[in-house]
Amino acid sequence: MEQDVASRGQLIMSPPAGKIRIGVVGCGAVAQIQHLPNLTFLSAEFDIVAVCDVSATLARGAAEEYGIGAWHTDLDVFLTEPLDAVLLCHSDPKVEAAMCVLASGRHLFIEKPVAFVPEDVDRMTAAAQSAGLVAQAGYMKVYDPAFLRVEAEVAAMRHDLRFVQIHHLHTDNRHHLAHFRLRRADDLPASAAEDLAAGRYADARRALGEVPEPVRSAFFHLAGSMIHDLYGLRQLLGPPDHVASTQLWNGGLGITTVLAWEDGPRCAATWVELERIRHFQETLELYSGDRGVTLSYPTGFSRGQLSTVMVRGIDGDGQSFELRPAVDWENPFVAQLRHFHACITQGLACRTPLAAARHDVQLVVDITRAGLST
Image (cartoon, rainbow, N blue to C red; front, side, top):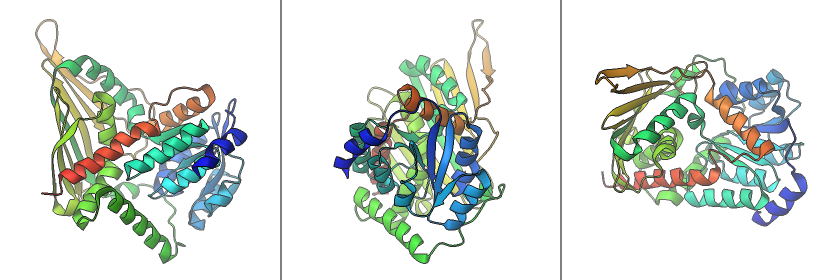
């Protein structure tokens, strides 16, 4: 497959001058709540040519709702459509689908988690680079205007960081999804769920070896949810040098890890599942000797809810202040799609390249392994 990528990519693809013909694989919750509405909103940049899902109910429903000309349940048939790019947001694992997309010469947008095994990221990255294709990870939080404000603040604090903390209370996603009218896949054969579970298990085994079920549970929570906190932290401080410690508890529904930078800060990061409480809280706090910043995110299933920033410090008169700067009203899911378009049509350097996501996939493995003794 890797040998086909370069030749087919060069033959099929040339950077579109304006509107990108895009296809979407996976028509579940995140596609219905975010990606399909946002691509439709960006009609000057994107033309949704086709959708694909193993559920005909979901694929047909998405095509009908958004006026999309073609829907498919088979990826190979889907890839015969006239597409410039493909957005993958189906259930994990996504690696083999991504390799098929790249082999067909299409630019790739891949939702998190991009993979569970670091070497799989290497394969996808090599395929994209050999074909000259854009491969962007769906890391929407670093496109959030609130994150950009925090990024500027932290750049001035980086030399003197004293405290870094991630605090992520995650409620069951059903609490979020209850606010939306969603199509449900009522036509999936039992074998589809079995194949999905088997693929996830095989990837966890390749990444970690044979581990108890609570450890696998924590691993998937790290890869699927806490990954947002980890890649944001990397964007601000660079990859941590090592994992100082990890504790796993409550059957993998509780995770606390300490990440360390040589001659630099330590970050205490906690993720906890609150299954029966309708409450979501995700914050990042950083403090230097004379300044502090707190970033609070809404759930990724929200629409129209802004992240917030609090800046604390001492002014020129020695007075303490707390400042809540205004945040631009832009959905980070939309912002990352605009960026994807610019990377393809203008050659802009990708802010969240798939290659850099390897750090995060490796870190999830390292955090989990550090918790094996707890």
